Length: 386
Length: 154
Image (cartoon, chains in turn cyan, green):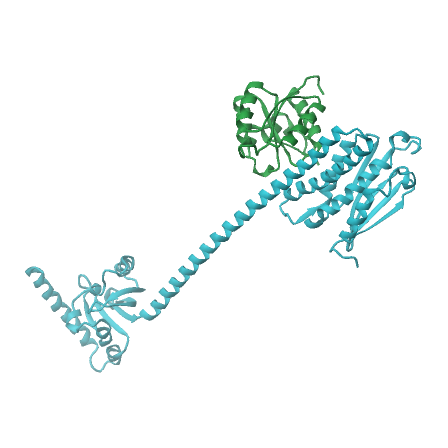
């Protein structure tokens, strides 16, 4: 400290003491408010707003006890001596701006005692105005909130650690999901390729053999494999891999089988309500529908007797899917030659239908449609018949 | 058919699928010009033989290189590729320049109708109507062949 500033400091202290005396003169021994402020356990100071740099002109005993300073070490000084290296500069800046603007402010700020130890100070600072409205003093009260702050910091710390743990766990789960999705795609890919391979094997053999009976069997097997293949293509096209849209499947199946059959003399009508079934039932139900439709297509309209047997009417197959209460009703009706004339009813295809209906807990009824044949499959919605 | 035979290159590493495809290509009146099982073979054959259409599987002997084959055919060989894959969802948005995709498992009938349809598209540079079931066209070719002018299929 230079001599000049030393002199300056002395002058400041003298001015502060004079200001303190003025304040004391206004609030003498008999003033109960002054007595309360001197004796309260809440630390309090008064600074002189009319002097440069707002020196402290009053500090109560609680303030001295909180900060560890003697009274003559604080009087005449700006209270920034309470700040230290870890005090948040942003908090100091907010304080300065409030003082400059003449506004009150409540702020938590890290302060330092004389011995260098720190405490969290819940500081409240407000201007005190004179009779003509000008600011004459600032009144400050200090509350040690270190315990509360420590709990806050511990909570913050705990929250940060929890958030980090949650983020790490989420990353693990995301990665696991990605692996699972990749695996699902891989398996789906292999299933489809293998179904394609099986189809190709059957087609290739069908090209080699000449026996009509064998050709017929191979074509039947190819249709069954194609029905299963259509199921797989549909299953993974939809967003929900656990549900299967039966009507969409029927549209694909019918368009493919009609195209392959090259029977322009047969008309198909579809009356399809949208129904979803569990993916696990998709393949057996698809096989049942494929078998019944194929049966109608192959046996209801023998090409050699078309016209004569149908009395000139056009061949027609109707596929209708509806939901009735707890049942799905799948109807395949033709106006063909009827079961009596059908070439191979009771063959392998119908055995498959019977077995799969058993597996699906479904019931199938074949009745004459006069003309033709009607087959209805009743499939319980929830897997059981009531 | 419109009198003109399309030259078709088959790019497929499963030999049984490739053999069966070759039969189907012949049956619809196209001319199978070759079979490639890896991306190098495919690119070499595509640039030598200049096929009108290449049927390209995404997974070849040297890995998932079919996409790159389709791009080369489009960019460097002046041909048109058609994907045949079980992984339709993994294709790039621009189809790597290919005209479309047939999802595996496909049916004999599905491939035949798709080839017949594409024969018309390629010879007339215009689609005769919406694509048949099982064939999905790329946005660029749907536009090129005038499908965006058609009313939405119901």
